[in-house]
Amino acid sequence: MTRPTLYSSAYVLPVAAPPIRDGAVLVGRDGRIAAVGPRAAIGWPEGTERVDLGESVLLPGLVNVHAHPELGFFRGALEDMSFRDWILRLVGAKRAALQDQDYAIAARWSCVEMLRAGITTVGATEASGAALGALLEAGMRGVVYLEALAPDPCHADAALATLQQAVAEMRARETDRVRVGVSPHAPFTVSDPLFASVAEYALAENLPVAIHAAESRAYRELVTGGALDFAP
Ligand SMILES: [Zn+2]
Image (cartoon, rainbow, N blue to C red; front, side, top):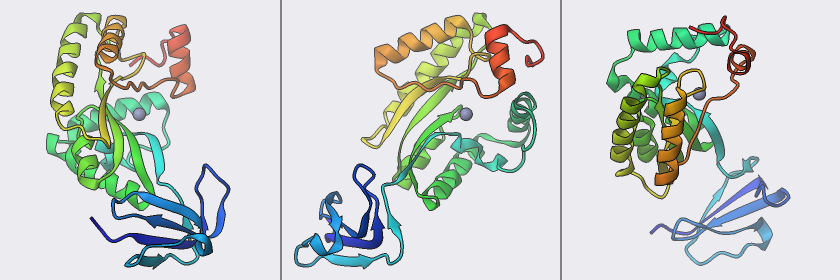
């Protein structure tokens, strides 16, 4: 329980309704929004704390629908290259430079950066699942889509089993704000049988699904026409 708080600012953007000049948002004792409107029109209960944000814009938290929080350390390190070169170098750099614990640190740092930028909800696609702990710790919302990667059909069963085990462990930590999903990584890294089995698993378990698709022209040409110059 906290004191009800009235936040006022030069503009309030409810998004679902037109912008409000000299607006205010009343947050009740339960932490939920109790009223939104022009500052002069909102009444507030006795004991309400008043926070005037001045010449600012007050709006709902932004949503980043696709991010890799566990890879935050590579910001600026892999720039200005083709998609093919980029992803090959990324895989090499991950193997060479990162230990398991580094993913958790990167995910925490990524959450700090997102919150500073106004992002409160994220779709986190990850191999390690490190974003789960980071989102919970940061009080953010989101879905952590655990990746499955195995281009060789012979490895499909093992990849599915690994995914299922990790997802089961992660789901024990789910909350109302943070959910767990699955991500068959991309058309060129997941075999047909693995795609089918992950889809079946997701449907049976009611898991949200994310996938990388058409990330570049070369990628599209590989998927639609089998262009070999993309293949690693
Ligand atoms: Zn991605």
